[in-house]
Length: 430
Image 1 (tube, rainbow, N blue to C red):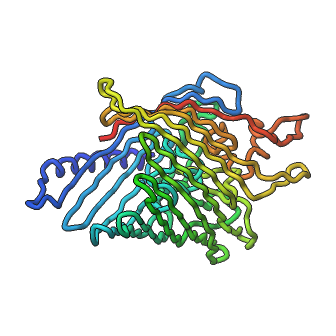
Image 2: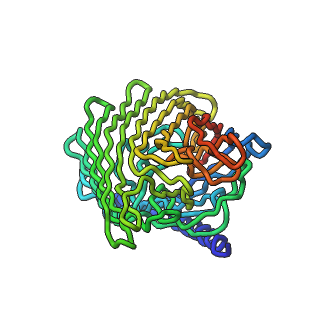
Image 3: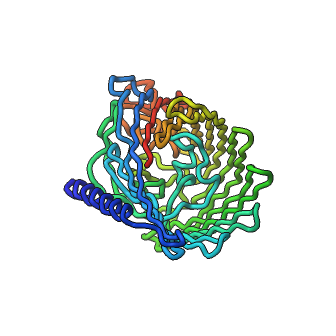
């Protein structure tokens, strides 16, 4: 805990020092050198309706995040850095940080913690919640390595990358502080911010090591892009001293026409993870924001369909300049089975739907979302469960995943109800 407060003071001092330098620094005669300092402050207002009976604290407000951003350029070198603090999750970590260089107008290199080039970019969704690929580390994911971006002519874009490992993790301390009946019960561990495979809670001593990415995108018409993404991901088992390579592939479309934006993507993946005995696993443990998906993990093989449509409306309502209504949909199938009480059950599918809209008012962005999900690890009273076998089993005495036919003999829930969270996220970006 002492470390946490000292770190906050350190980054506050760092922010003030860099701000002072930025104010004093002027561009050179050619205007090529720069130093920009910014950040963001975001708050959430939420009302949840999950498996448990509703209680008063199901409606609550939290501080989502505050962050520090620094970007700079000098003699052709580029620096981009972002560090985030999440008081609700009692953690903080580097979001991205890399050195870059433009070899030409068409060729760029980034070295450090950088975004994985996979699927629709920058995001495969419109809402504050993202969509299912995000919770598997297949949307807005960051790792440590080197990436090259190359524009071939005016229409074709190529991105290739090698990542040695996951991004650095934040510190390990404390418990999270959520509203709702399970407030303050989650214990957090040393896990990076974006979703990554973690040895925490696994029957396998595995971690991400050596990942290769290739992404190709072509502009077929003005504002309409189609692309293919491939990922070869190594999982190193320290007990077996062996690396097994899984894969992920995606076909994606991102189209802007009139005031609309349409995003479509299909993703298939197979982690090919082995436990410490060398047996191929049906589920792997993942984590995000410092916490593993305890109990259920993530299905080791599956397919994900995502679709999103948004429409931009320009307005002149005082500070409000635009409203962006959207509808995002995501569906995940899984390859795996689980035996419960002597009967075999297929892993249950995961669903996610987010209708909502974003309001832009200068540097203030407000997301108003109704996030709905089945077998979703974040839309549940039992954080982290649902992305693996689904709501088939639980050792939770509260019976979140069971109907009880008689005392002491739980019965699997074959068709869970939709869980819902109404969420307003207000963020000031500067």
